[in-house]
Image (cartoon, rainbow, N blue to C red; front, side):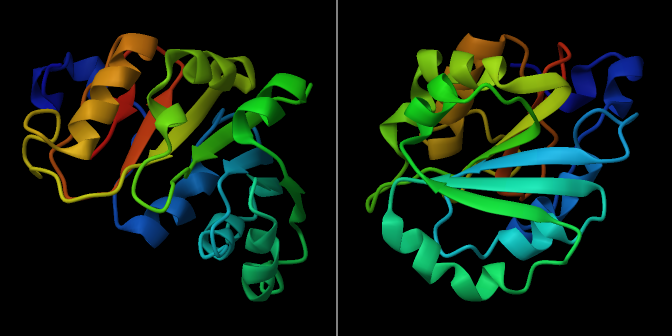
Length: 200
């Protein structure tokens, strides 16, 4: 997986973003097809809903659907949901992420994958079949954002025994063209155009 500096000059200016967890989620409004004034966002994994407000901070985000198989996530996220701006069409569904992707007919401009068990990544995030489901639910020029936890080697995140390196390896098998910018961010971004991928 080549370093960002090794990419052709024309490919260095394609959409990528960086920052900390909340900053990254706040950048959701800049993702998806740049010609669209309004975008739809699917969030797989709700947790306590702390990412909802940064996502909804953009007036470009028209709708936000959160899917979590834990019914208590809806209750835990109530305070955060009550802070959402009025322009957001927000809904939440109690469902398994993969099953939801199979049964929904809808497509989204941005899909955020924030799936964990109590001890680490949900095994499904490494699954090629799951990645294909994500692709099938993504609008043209859309982005998939993987929240990747753990402390990586900031200047060389694709190498070494880090959680992000293994996730990147699996995503490379599914998307085929992965690059990174050396930073200390905590997210993975993939745009469906070949060659646009950034992660930590």
